[in-house]
Image (cartoon, rainbow, N blue to C red):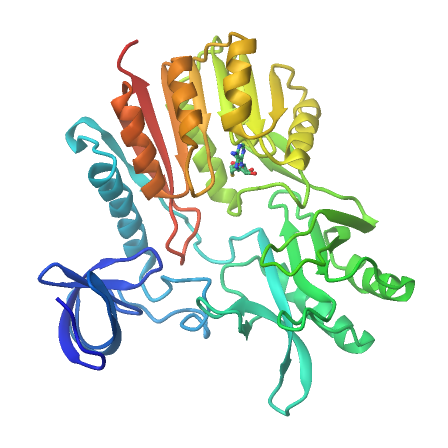
Amino acid sequence: MEFKKNQEITLKIDDLGNNGEGIGHVDGYALFVKDALPGETIRAKIMKSKKKYGFARMMEVLECSDSGRVEPACPVARQCGGCTLQHLSYEKQLAYKEKKVKDCLVRIGGVNAEKVEWLPVLGMEMPWHYRNKAQFPVRMQKDDSGELRPVAGFYAGRTHSIIPVTDCAIQHPCMKEILETVLSWMQEQHVPAYDEVSHRGLVRHIYIRRAYTTSQIMVCLVINGRQISEDLKRTLVEILSGIPGMTGILLNINTDQTNVILGKKMLLLWGQEYIEDNIGGVRYHISPQSFYQVNPVQTEKLYQTALEFAGLTGEETVWDLYCGIGTISLFLAKNAKKVYGVEIVPEAIKNARENARLNGIYNAEFFCGAAEEVVPRLAEELAALADVVVVDPPRKGCDIVLLDTIVKMAPEKIVYVSCDPATLARDVKLLGEKGFEVKKVRACDMFGQGGHVETITLLTSKAR
Ligand code: SAH
């Protein structure tokens, strides 16, 4: 079926897509409609029609039954590419995420739903102002009076034009003061923002991290240049170091024409290079280059669930693959005989080793490299059969070589922590064919107001 552009139709929305868009079906043909919600029947105008699916614009809600539509809290929620579900009640967001995980595991993963214990989604008590990390792009944009000024904010969905926002509804409130301070420093000192097209200008991003339990803050300006003048350094440090909690002020050098935010080199201007946080009694040092979960309250629930699923007695050898700064490794170490962590980012491994020492944990060992290269080698060298393997890969999921190696290591349990249910399901299918079955699944909401969802899955070996 194909529609004509601008054709108007009546459409019942029955699902939500990955970017929070409503999905309606006409004889099996899927139409994606931004801002529409399941439960609503709408008048829609066709914008683009392809062979198997198309895009339509929402014109009017004709009928609505229990769609959960609410007024977004943030005035720029519609334009901003950050939050995709603010117009949906939080309760419905959770229900949608829970359903998405189950649908993926059953449809793509081939999981028998009857044989799995589906634990209720772990929702947030306060789904606002929860994020501990922000990377705001900075550009020169004309204000209402036509004057060029530095602005920071978010990319409008799918584009690189900036919606100026310093007061983001999901970021920690300290971010607003920091952004405004840096922007007024740029204005006063005539520091130009970066321009993507001409590859000129200096400040590309303002990158901020805050540790939840210690309130320590790190600010890093990503610049298109190798250095800034002593005068600029001094004035920047002067205005930022007075902000309560400020622990480190850094420059990151990124002179490449790229969308990648951070360059390789960091220069410390003031304070120290890391912040310290605490999850469930374990202390962590976090470098700016290292991955760290963005939702501290939910992270503890996530790790606690991983620990429960692992069911450790103190006798087990545990592997934590894609371990970042060793968060899960150290969280589990107290209850295991030995933990091996593997991670690709050198700074993160440095943090992980430091963090083990910091907590007096001596039964954890860390290796730097791609898991799919390091683990096959180590598994042979150490002849280390594993009792429990934890994986927590990025969105693209686990490398197939790694999955095969895990199967060879023959653990009793695999705890799969995933930030994308589709790739989780793909990997679960493969593990299913090689003798592992899904026992327990629990979704955990780390991204309130956004469409992403985290899942913890326990697989056990059929052979043991
Ligand atoms: N478990 C950690 C980190 C999870 S994020 C935590 O909860 O904090 C995924 C991590 O995988 C990141 O730190 C990323 O740097 C790392 N990574 C990405 N590709 C990898 C690969 N091929 N091998 C090992 N680690 C990888």
